[in-house]
Amino acid sequence: MSRVTKAAVERRGEIVDAAREMFVKRGFDDTQISEIAKELNVAHGLIYHYFKSKTELLYAVIDEFAKEHMAEAQEMVANSKGTAIECVGALFENNTNNTKGKTYEKLMLSLITNQGVLEYVNRTVILSISPILLSLIERGNADGSWNCRYPKETADFIIQGMSGIMSTSCPAFKDDPEKKEIYSDIIMRLLGVGGK
Image: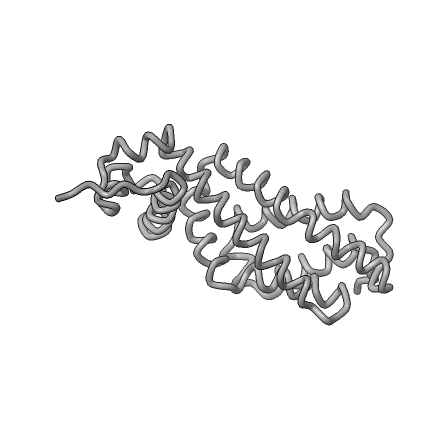
C-alpha cells in the first residue's frame, strides 16, 4: 500500500473528526488511540505527532464542537427578527434540541466523572457563548425586553449556570418540562424580566 501524504491541517482535522465520531459512539474511556489510527489507516504514532495524549485530542474535539456551536448561535442571533427575549428562548431551545447538541450531550455523559475535562468544557463554553449572550442582553436592554444592570456579569453567570446544569443533569433538564420552565424563569429574572 502506498503512503498518502497530506497537509498537516488536513491530517489533524481528519484525526479530530475520527476521534469525535469514536468518542461519541463508544465513549472516551472505551476508545483507544490505536483504534482511531486503525479507523484512519495510519500508524498510531502519527496521532501522537499531532496530539501528546488522548486527553489533548479530546480537548481538540471539544474545541471543534464549541466552534460549531458558536457559529450556529451567531447565525441564529444575526438572522433573528424577533425581540431579544424571543431570541434568548430560541437560543437555549436550539442548544438543547439540535442534532449537534445531542451528539455533544452524548459525549459529555461519557465524561461526567472527569472533573478536569468538565472544567475545560465549562471554560470553553463560557468563552464561546458568553459574547453572544452578552450581545443579546444588550439588545434586550435597547429594545425594552428587560432592564439588566450588569450585562457582562449576567451573561457569564447564566452561561456558567447553564453549562453546569447541562454537564451534570442533561437528561433531567431535557426530559423535565417543569425544570426547564424553572430554569427559564430564573434566567428571565436575572435579566430583569418580571416572573410569576
